[in-house]
Length: 328
Ligand code: AMP
Ligand code: MN
Ligand code: MN
Image (cartoon, rainbow, N blue to C red; front, side, top):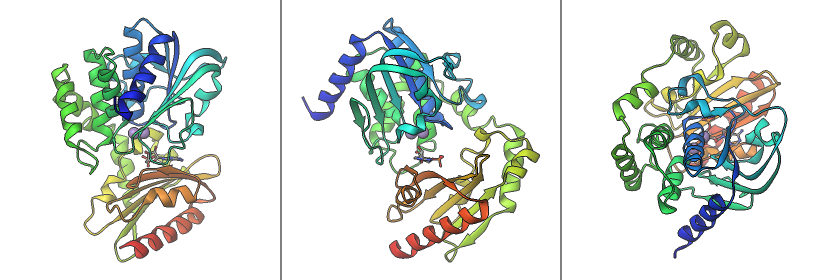
């Protein structure tokens, strides 16, 4: 048995042998976090387990079409005991947010993720930084351990993989990713329907937000760096909610000549959320974000940095420009 299968066997055994589970994922969730949480929760429920699927933000409006979306809720204020708590797609434990406080005790913590910066917290750990999505790892785990993959589970895994690969476009999209996608379609995923709900169903306010962001667009580093910013005042005026901005940074990354794109979002707690994308493996945005207490992947990373919007913009733009000049 190879290393991977041995790990899967160990995790599979822990999942089979226990009864009460909490399945968790990171704050400000994306499609991979929510799809993966639902997929694993549903598979465990098929096995007759008692499962809570929790995220600090609950189910986002834009993903509430996912099969059995109603299972995923915000954590309760009164903590509960569990046999097993599973953290999915969560690079650092504190990104579990309020869900961690809702777990009074768990006999076992399982950590399944694809962020290279994951410090391997927990008792049973499976990190594959080559996987483009946690959903891809879960597909491998569930099939390897002969856990159920119903059409509802397949749809959630497909949404997780589709969103984290930028619709099968990012460079970590592999032969295996397409094989898994094919298998999920075979399980009943309606590609046209899911894709339309994921990518052609935005509220109008998201596009109004994009118009506002493009007004703040700036370039630096000879056009290799592009950024835009959202102030608290603009967010309020536009009536946008946090989930509205996921993916808008791709408009900056898509510009010819741009290597690094940055999105700055002023938060309500005196911090600025920094979201970074790189088009060149030599410019590691995770390394930049890690310097500021964040993390992520080489080509997509984030951090929350204390300071005003102009202060944080200045610091991060300087670091990003230095990284581009050093490495290209
Ligand atoms: P985002 O820009 O928010 O879409 O995040 C890009 C990637 O960086 C995702 O894989 C996140 O999990 C990771 N990431 C974002 N913010 C943080 C943070 N504050 N700490 C650690 N990782 C983060
Ligand atoms: Mn994620
Ligand atoms: Mn992910």
